Image (cartoon, rainbow, N blue to C red):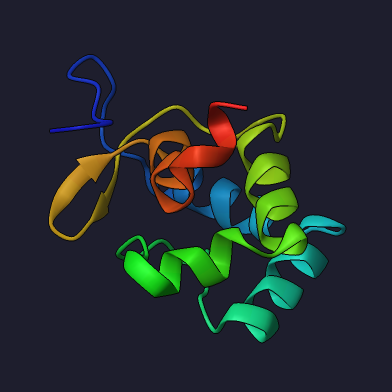
Length: 105
């Protein structure tokens, strides 16, 4: 269970709504929208992280990298577990999984 915290509960409906509202707020929504237009990958709603050439495409675009970092650093981003691919993961861990290399620089 990578990125899952045993001490964190599953996100409540209110927490899921908070995540959605953060993703829809500007400027983050603009970054995510441009990222999707450039790479065809939609960061939110959360889904399988890209791999291989798809990941290279997503992570190669400044708007995608910026959107991921802005989302990650958003005040009020709930610390709880969402389900992605049938596994619990925190929103921040999911964002890190999309482009792992941007978090090490």
